[in-house]
Image (tube, rainbow, N blue to C red; front, top):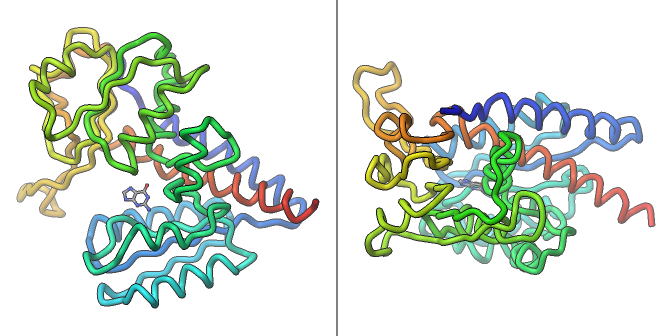
Length: 296
Ligand code: GUN
């Protein structure tokens, strides 16, 4: 059984990213990332802080905006417009999900697609669907793919079942795995909360990717002997014995399936660190592209 070490692979991606950022710095360009949080959801706040901290660690210009839950749509649109116009900012991320009164689709459309390092803007979603490499690909799916390729896990011709159909993970990951070429060429099935006989579907998979956001949703019945499991879930569950009062668990019951897997990502320490590393990489890509665009 191979335990896929997301922290080690993320460190490698961050090292590459740092080198790319340093060569931009030599040309006088400092990559800039803005992360925006609306509201006080504790998990979102923790994610935004670690994104901001990682950007600062890499020497990026890092802007963190933590806005009250009552922030209006108009005010949030104005902040996005300000960041779009700021030449020191190359990447913009608005943490999802925002409070219920915010129209998230409108916010995403307001972000300049050239600064949309999340890859959520319709232009970037379209480019991914059309195999146009000039767009941005969402960070978590990119991270999942990199975990597989770095671990020597072949996707070509293999049956991959993704559990979850979100815009952030399930849908873009299906598109990535379907692409022609390395890290693609898979036979992809997307299952979700309304799928019938889910265990029958996942047991047919060579690779199961769990991205449904429910703690321990998949157990030993769902995973066949010798399968690869990528667990995207990061769920907080109450744990009075832990100092924080909670612990993080995945969408997969790790203990129940670990012995039957060929390879598995742990939670924490699997996909989580990769998402942040790919965000940093996308930010440097945005800076490189915006530089080339202004040179022409
Ligand atoms: N919420 C959970 N994952 C993500 C992500 O990758 N980007 C944004 N903006 N919000 C998220």
